[in-house]
Length: 181
Image (cartoon, rainbow, N blue to C red; front, side):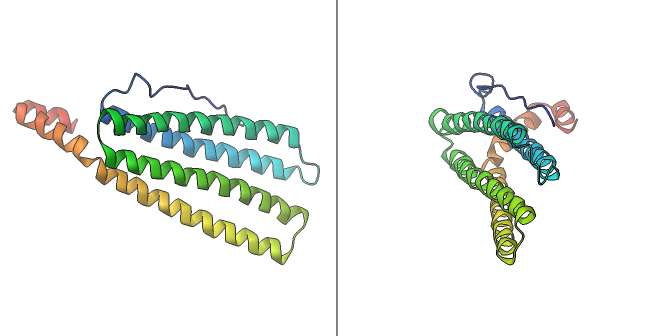
């Protein structure tokens, strides 16, 4: 399984401009995606051990994954707070808050789906299969909401980039080449 590395508090002092904070937010979201992938890989390995599951190893993975998600959330909430309180960019802060809420729902559904998938192996039935489909459908809906919110964040933060690129282009003809590179 992969190595999980997150440095807590990275959003504290190193990202001071809204643009830098937004860039850090996107990096943290990418780290979440990678963490979900590690979680799924670890769960697949756990399931392959059926019926003699290696629960202590999986429990350790769940602990590491939980710590990683918590650290990511702390950093993202700090970014949200800075957007709101220090930069008065309430629209961006609001969308980031919604993304955080949906991410919480997503991890809960992923964990629930893992339990259902294990039950499909241990005690297959139509009821378990139905529950599996229900949770998968709900998880797809949550993922779609995340995509929509990320798109909303893109539009909400557009002005962070428009202002800078217009400023760069109007300074000198050579600056246009710098932006295009």
